[in-house]
Length: 425
Image 1: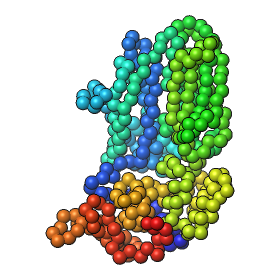
Image 2: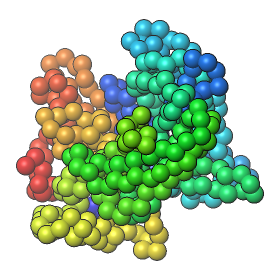
Image 3: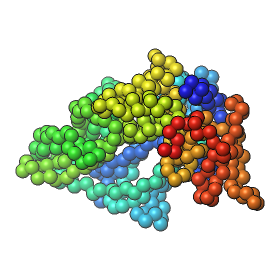
Image 4: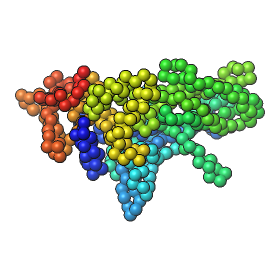
């Protein structure tokens, strides 16, 4: 196991020196790390329209920074494209550039630092398709997300906006600046879930607001009701839900606006993703993450974690294993853990096989050794099945993969499976 740890350290250091990631021509591998996008529908000042607010959250580690004097600068371009519901016509586009700067090099690679963008549009209620495209100016790497959206008509008599989760509220004099949680990610250490929304009313009145949280199995885990006195016009609402038992998985938050007869006037929902504090956001299932440890942990170590009596005990043992691999015990960051599961995620996205990408031969080698120094691809040679050769100069090793079926499932030639216990079980 020590040999794998040494390789992880080497590849982490070499990636800082701009080693190029493995690239597959038939896959979209030129993506920067994931960005996050969230949106809300709010009452517009224009008749017949709804104000559509868009929030973009781009992690610093998705941006390539250039040092000038003592400051690190990064820039990226954002394009929002609005299509009609069947994506047959472009209705309009919005483009802008974001610049980020910091004097702290560690912030440029931290998973806890990010840049927030905000734009709003007045749109006719209905169904649309929204495409968000981001390109980093220094690396020229790109990322995009396309998804359908529904612009709600807001009731002027008594209505409610969509929910926006809040990461923080910064108080400056008499002004409050909201830091949105566009990723909609909380962790098992989240004790206070902060959110904001607006209530619109044609008169002064009292209303009930019901707050409900359901887990991924549709079980109610939290519910409470408040009485609010609202004024005519727009009423900004800030609310904190105190709940201490979030575990990894998806949750649904529902806010319902009710009249004094307990009749629901309007309700809105927001999906929340719960993660384990200190772990990459790609880990969405603890049992799966434990299973994926086969290239770095022994069968005995994995079984000991799996056989835990409670979820918390299992999580504690999982974290203890990875903390033992942490190079700097005084740091919150664990580059070994982050790099390992980055490779798992990369393998799942880029290597085809009967099962998940991390279980393929290419995934096995990639997770263990990281990006190769050189790749030779032979896809269309006469009298030969497609094959690839991965070379690792520093380790003085190479691996040959052959696609026997022609469907992109590459198998390692003459593999020594004893070096990877648990492989293809």
